[in-house]
Length: 100
Image (cartoon, rainbow, N blue to C red; front, side, top):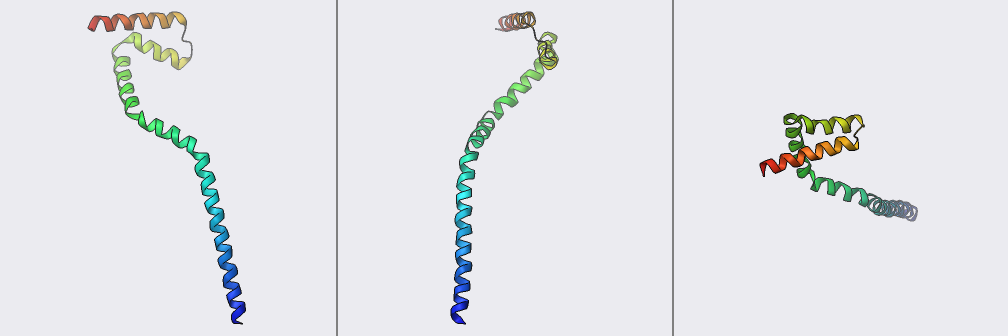
């Protein structure tokens, strides 16, 4: 009777140990697979402040200058042509030179 009880407890402990080992192996695989996405996420979080500053500057330019707003509308509707890019870049360079 005592031996049967000990054997039952031992088999349960062995089953739990197998499950733990299986769980550790799955954890290692998960970390290996997700490391690429973690690197992407860390990169995104490291440039978050620059994206915030850039979007603020873009908002100021879009509300202040109609020509700069043209590029945003063109990208939004998907018909950004070479001539429009040329006009916008030329205007932007003139604007920068004017204030520098």
